[in-house]
Length: 311
Image (cartoon, rainbow, N blue to C red; front, side, top):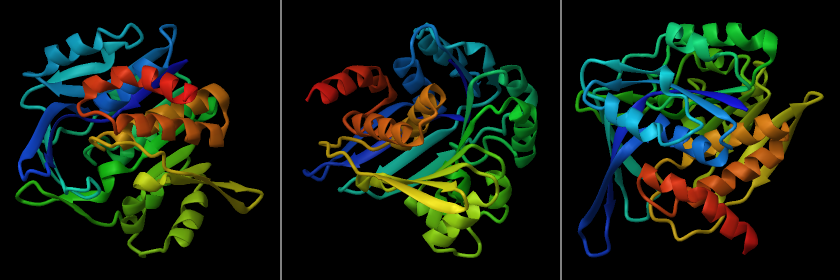
């Protein structure tokens, strides 16, 4: 199996309030790094992961050093740019359900010539980590490049639904050309909040799902935090729904759950072509992610899933 990952790297600084009134702060690589580390752990050493992203010149060598520890990650698509890597501060409330996000030093969009060498694969994950990861024109070029081979593209809207103000704070805003982003991708992923605020028409969820599936997207996943999520498919002009329930955990940090969900979903879909099974597997991986902070903990996920399946 060969999977290409496209999206921005960032350095996550996570702020979580403690019951004592103090604040627990963790810092690690984030963004597309979550997806790369997830695939590196859930795929075999015979598989290959091709990450395509840039790293600031102060971070580039350290990023390569970390990723070279994974035998199935090909780092040739990682490039260096001048200036700092995007830093993201995430401030959670005490319940861990709502957060304020601030992003500084957002990288330039990844150009198609950087992506083109890694299009002959079994699946492509595009994660809009910053919302500026690629342009719509690059998205069109990716689709054109792989459509004849029927290579599945999994597209995570993520921060495409976020603007950024003068103080670097992210805010929810509609995306006027959202249908063009959806066009001719195999699967779409949004959180419940992202789906509710995406369209300028302010569709309710049922109408949004209908419109999203009408632009040649094969499947749409709406994640619902601790309540799991819903997979929508259109078969013979009828919308089919598959609900996957939340998996109770003693959650420590939800940062990265959507990123690992998308990576796990695509990997399982490429392997099985089973939509429901892929959603269930991704749900299990995302639940395991809640049990630790920092991307280094991803290396524990295979053991967590083994223990969970035995229990």
